[in-house]
Amino acid sequence: MDFRTDLALERRDLYRKANNMKEEIPGIETNEEEKNGTKVTRVKITNEEGASAIGKPIGNYITIDIKNVKLATEDEIQNSAEILAEELRKLYDIHLNGKEDILVVGLGNMGVTPDALGPSVVKDIDITRHLLKYAPQYLEEGARPVSALAPGVLGTTGIETQEILKGIVDNVKPKLLIVIDSLASKSIERISSTVQIADTGIVPGAGVGNARKEISKDTLGIPVIALGIPTVVEAATIAADSIELFIEKLQQDAKSNEYLNELQNEDKYEMIKEVLVPNDFNFIVTPKEIDGLIENMSSIVARGINISL
Image (cartoon, rainbow, N blue to C red; front, side, top):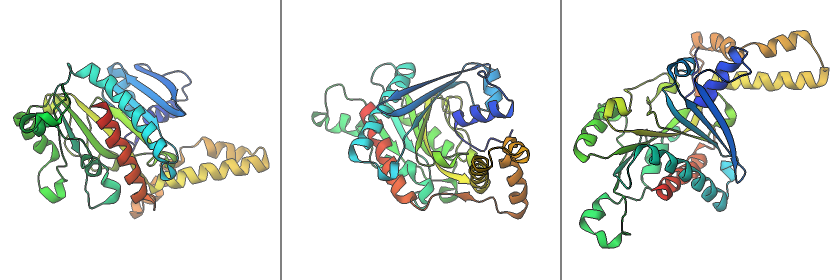
């Protein structure tokens, strides 16, 4: 099954729909919670059966739905950041012992706005590792050592990001990595309005068919928390979602129509993709307001990480 999405929650939903499942997928546990008007959904993959079903490693995946980011007020941004921080702390408790060293890594290309989330976040992270050594009087007692970098992309450095991070981890010796990256979604609604946190690492570029070397505990030797926000979708996704809305409108007007009911149950994404891909028309698309969306989402993520640390 071609998921073409980085979100575990979407993969779960797509698998259940494709297999007409009303119950939960074996090997997967899910729960939802409302926090100050924000929905938080936790998907836990507990065994290889669940991992194989949705193509994600065993571990925890938290999805935070943040709506109206483009028009978000200062209070709304702060509320979202605090919810994000709370979820991050729960993962620290699983993978860290006390205030151990953390390295924050912003993946992506600062020169390409939809891919600039990671570097945009890193510049606003509160760095403490050097201050603990050279100016400890300016920090609170018991401050956690935090370092950060934006390593660039293979196309501009000629070096795989995983290779860069391996060298840094071996020398700096952090106990946990937080990796921030732009993701791909299979839903227009989730663009710049959803945050996914996972403690299973990340394969950069996987959602847009340009997978790079995996960044995870298996490859680096330390736990990796991946924090991402969808910033792009495929043209086929937009077309499929548009047809879905169109069919719903026709059904509302016509009440019932056997052909439309059958069409609604078809996987329109795959049908449309079959038409677009041979002609190289299956573009990766981002909203025209992406600059403002990235700015607000970067603020939410940077604040959330800083609060959590």
